[in-house]
Image (cartoon, rainbow, N blue to C red):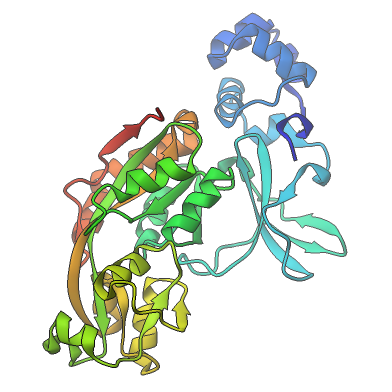
Length: 354
């Protein structure tokens, strides 16, 4: 669906006239232009999330009191629903209202916004797409960030569990607000910058979440063998999908000779598979190895960043995300995690395309 086909009904003019405000007065109160107010009232312009929130603040009401979708036909699935009925989440990303089939999340069971049944959307009344931030990442501690985000802001966070390159692909397609990646380390010290530059067609910012330890997750007792012996041994390996930081580490260690048949969906699944005895070795981060009770041998320290397009920096949900990452409470939580270093948490680096 194109931006031009996205239609919102609004009550801006009615709310303005009830207060006897001119378009110029409303523009000044909301920090917008008079021509912008006129275009929004007439339905010629779809307001950005920032503009919608500014207008709701000026009127002292909810965004939902000013704007309503002109029928569910304006919403689009990010990918086809796997079955009917299908629970879904809603989020406004840019000017598109996106529908996400509910999937397994590192946050546990996140309340859904409605159910797709018999070809129709059945929304719950509390669905608030304009207050939803969507992040694709593989950080096993992302629940700490989501809980602080909910506590410190009026917004909620949805997390799609994706490896680094897959997360960047969703960001490049405009389907998420931020993507987590850890492709910089070992032979690729600038890997995060390189990967983001290859996939994104606009300027972006890397926001540091942590510097963590990634390495070998091993069945109890194998760590004593040493890395060289481990790589020469005939062990049962559990891998990660291509484009993940874990697969990059394994390729470097094995010089591309190891291709595990079985693939885990995330860091924790690697450790859980080893704990169950179905595999003996894989690549994961120290945090989940300690939590799952398997051995860990550190291979490299990596920068784990959130990649955020510069064009979205004024979105209140994105600004709130940056503020939460930089907050002392979140940094303190991270500093207590094994293998997580929070000394650079919140640092940002803007990257311009040449």
